[in-house]
Image 1 (cartoon, rainbow, N blue to C red):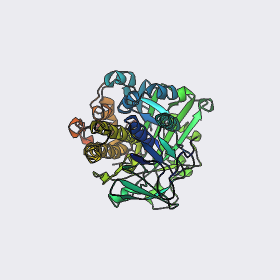
Image 2: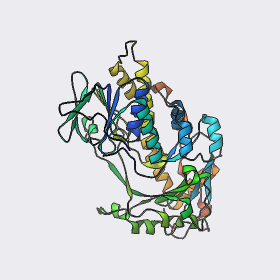
Image 3: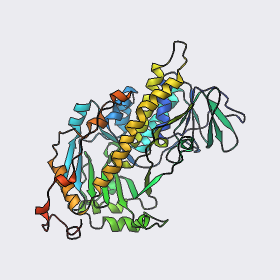
Image 4: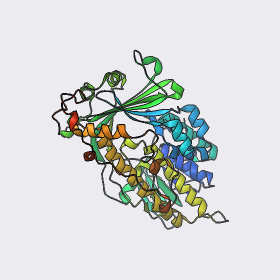
Length: 442
């Protein structure tokens, strides 16, 4: 639990800050910590009464655990989470295995582990790190506006107060107020909704759950994920599906009756997990179209304010953590002996590299979602391609799991796609592998 330390005075802030971070989520806190490590005076403003995070489990790939290791936080993260040994993708209709990643070998290749952790545990870890680093943490501060000044930038609070600093980092999420300085756009609905559950393992009865793996079942307009949390004490599940009510334009969409209907024809392993899902809340899945400009004067976007993704790449929190790391690296590279920072150069370097990387992730996540949710013949073609992949082929992960680029030149090339049409599955038509409801689909 955090309490306000030095809240802004009615006519401004009480102590000078180099950087003001708006938003106390994972992105905002990780950026604040990264900048404090470089000697910056940082204050974080959050609209909530207490710093906290809601949700369930998240996945952290080697491009993020590499950063946690540099921060001296990896061992703590591993103690809070689980380091699985494999990631397995299966067909949600027939339950058959399609492909897998050997996560032990993946760690050998990239030098750092793939791990899973409860979102609140990761957030709490960064909150404690910020306190140790002397970050000023302020709650009950809802920001309603941003403006540049001659000497920096200022934020306007709903209660009439203001606060300012040399630089303002807007980590204010999907519905970012600061983003309006750069573009007039709105969140894009995917018509998909996610149900989650993180339950004590004792509640999982009558099922053989392998907590050493991250399991993903992909199916027609739905998918199902499960893995262990907190050292195997909890099971995390995510059930995602396309909402017919959303497609029909109804306001009340993604409801539990739709959850049950969509997963009724999946394999027994998936159906067994549906009764455990939380039914009093669900998360409608939105992203935004990529933008390439994140900086306006002394105000910069970070995290979901800049690049809210669909979740299929499991890179949302990772990208936000990378943003803060990259920004701090450029601060270090442009800090003079007297401690002053070339902020225009720093923000320009940040904006030169991060938008393109995150554009790739956002567009790939959309394409990945389409691939996961294929039906009919296209589903069979996808399955054939995935089954043909060698477990130790990292052609599709090299661009994302390698070291985070600090310059455009360091950004690795994207993978080459394999067209579905390149696979002939005509010999499967009418066989037992094609469920009756899919056999005639085109």
